[in-house]
Figure 1: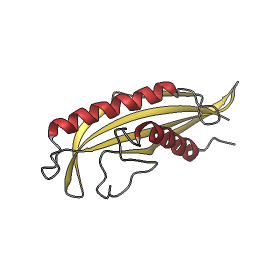
Figure 2: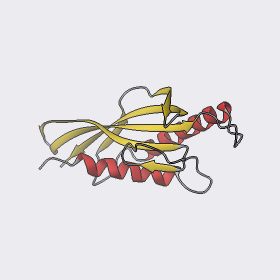
Figure 3: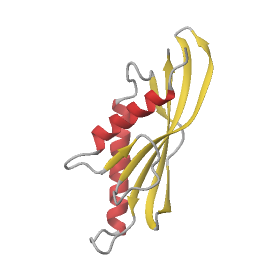
Length: 147
């Protein structure tokens, strides 16, 4: 039976949530999907499925490769709260570092994936969501899973 992409996505989001959300940590919420709105939350991280490949049987069993997008969204500025463009960029950098520290610590996660690695350089852009401007960074990761 083929591995389930959904199980690994939800687990990856849970691991990131533990590392990123809570008192003194840099993110307000981690979602295991791409929500339509953030309901005033910022920064937010999402984990969404990007693709799958089920190439063949190997000596280790059925192998699948799952790709995921980790999106980081940080509100660009907010004059009412004093949140500045500089605060945004600094927080985006901190979140990126924390995500990669977490990914390095979880390159292998028994029962979910045999190897995790980055697929390509991340890409930081500006986007508007719900009329608000965010800095957004997209990190593409690949999980190799054997069943």
